[in-house]
Length: 471
Image (cartoon, rainbow, N blue to C red; front, side):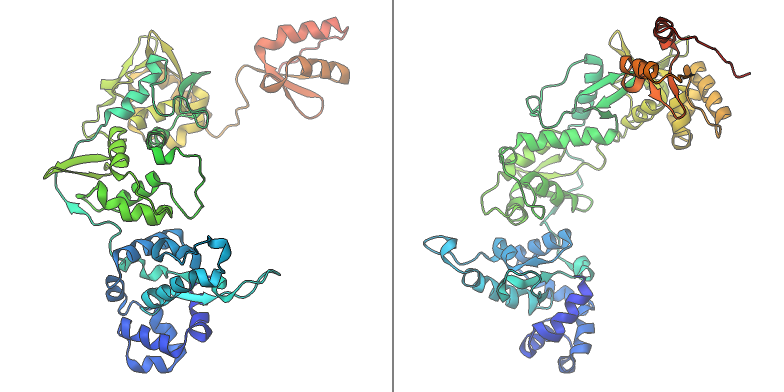
């Protein structure tokens, strides 16, 4: 249900006059607004008094509102257990009704959040044949109009220092291309997700997918998750909850410029965001984040503080193309894996055929790739440099530009018409998959180098081959 509909129902039927008076007092509405529910409804969603009301909340309540704000959906009373707890039976929950278990929790939600005018609460109608109690049907929502007035999620300190950042972590990963072997990491023995860098048929891939710089960051965070013990447990988190590392990274993403957090400031946030009332290894998460290049660290007064790097894929001293590209006499370009910017490598993977020779990464212009990527890379600095400095790339780029707008089926491709069905089936069985493609009206398409083998099959079957050329 959308916010406006929930608010309308709350004001019409789900709060009493005493609740309205309490909200008016908390938000500073004029007393006369309590006499008309329609007018009160309009005042509630306004920003009048909301900042003061939110600032009156406890820190745990503020953290909880940040969580449900991020979720962008309504929650039931059971979700507030992570904030206010609930009644426990000596014999376990199964011997206590839902209403008894969450009666005190509901009172706290009503008094601390709804009556302060920061939360909308309604009773949903019965939607199934299963009968639910009124307590089970309560739903609560934090209006998006109030989000900007929420106090900060984390209590940060401000330092102007650049901090210590292990930028070499991503570069070491990239150097696997030249080394030909994967760097040991917490993911080395994992079968769930691979981030191996490889070159197959001239294409650079990471984990079996086309190389993208962002995938290096995915690998980095996967290593962080795998290196923290609480994140390696075989448990599944509800869609509304976060794993500890995910919650920590989200918290750091909320910091402003020059703001830093000590590890222990994550304790309350991790408990509420994960829904686990345990002591999470905050120091371990932050140190692992720094070791894997996901966080920057600074030490002040004997305490370590952390934050996210401004841009882990950017280097303040980024080299020019001439510093990481060397053009051979035949137009082939040799890449320095140790220096090339990640964005430049991403461009090269989309316009070149790559290969490893003598532990060096080489790029040869690929006119088909260039044609496909022309609109997206035309204004890129490395693309312009290759056009000016490599004869091979210049020729391929000019060819692609001349063909631009024309339909190119393929290079080195042959088309044949096979009217005899049994012969066609015989050929298709011998060359399945991408080597041979069946076309409408008895036609097949195949690479030119397959012609001699197909000719033998045709001749052996007693059929005659007729050749035709498009003049």
